[in-house]
Image (cartoon, rainbow, N blue to C red; front, side, top):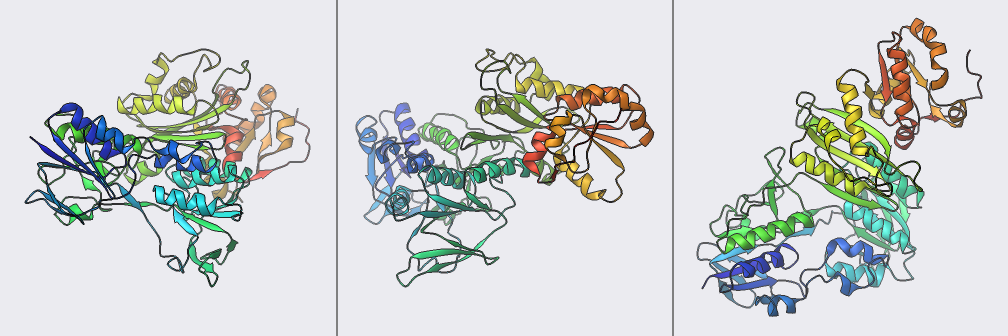
Length: 564
């Protein structure tokens, strides 16, 4: 009878144990968890702070009794494995040693605790990864005596925690060392999310690092102090600055790992040590786009990898090939999503790319409650293959990112998107879905009918030519829209009057940068100029809407009369 030991009881471990049992009724399966709980929803913790998830019990996805009774798994709670001998196939807890035929290592990761001054003396702070953390935050941070909470780290969990604390009625400060929140995304998308957080009353500090905690004589944090000297009065602190894989036991046995300690596994979830499998936040799997080992600490991958490891541990041959950084996060009424590689990654890896950005309604304009969806896709300029995408909006982001994630996996061209047979009905989508619109816009670019300029490139153009402007910045919106605010330095020639000004524009002999509110009218203005002999014309991707969300370089012009 085959004996399988599973170490770790969060997500990958129970998934592996249950799959092993489904594949082999006779195997002896033991699961060890150092804590008192198994299979709880760490990703759901932020939403329990606000009451969206109503109780602690709802976070308990699988009870130990279910694994024991339904799957005949010998569950050892509060029994930490402290040593592994892979030569003799033994694991040791503080109680005794256990032999194995196959080992599944699913120990996850632990929160990083930075060396903040006085942190070891302070009491009223917590990380946010375990049920112990959850209990401390709910019992101390969410009490009526805690009016203000500081969240350090603005990644996925940090942003979710900040939002839900605000929904729970707390004053919240969110501190991030990078230039923008949610740094998995490009700067402008991070800015979009940061603007939402700020509009909801959260104080967001970027490019800020915490140097110390000011504490009282009882070790209670009274204030958080940044390296720049800013002092934030606070009642509780939550740390969410990153995680580190729990792999020391196998690293001591010589297992191969990447730089952060995550174990290298193949498609069968085998480590470099014979008869040892691994799955979860403690492993490094292949990036399907780069074919390099990468780190993807998300529940989707933990569960799929655990399933494969459990099956293969009893002799099956199930592959989990890898991932490519698909992610999604709720930011109050908005959603931010991504898949594949974005501009930062592509530049770093020296991969040629082009980008196309559109603003389109997630439902038809005639259907009540239409909301805009901002979609940016990165693609190979030679093959047109989709390399990645980022999206922001209030409605339908999840649907579109899954379409684009599938397109990345299938290596579709960006022009293939226009051929997809996507579901259509007014409550769900316009007749021309935003994904399809992006493909149409790209076709126009590829056929030299149009050329976009990103808001990042426009900002550089403005900065580089501030005193000696060798371009014309043209606002093609109505006079009424223009007078409410425009990009610094823009002149206003409304689209419907533009043909009257073509000769004057040509006489300037400058490249023309056009924008409207979202992009469509700018494109039409671009066509008018191109078809009348103005050769260098660029349309601002996403128009004034995206610029306004990205930059503070807005001016309110004096009321003007349009030139006749």
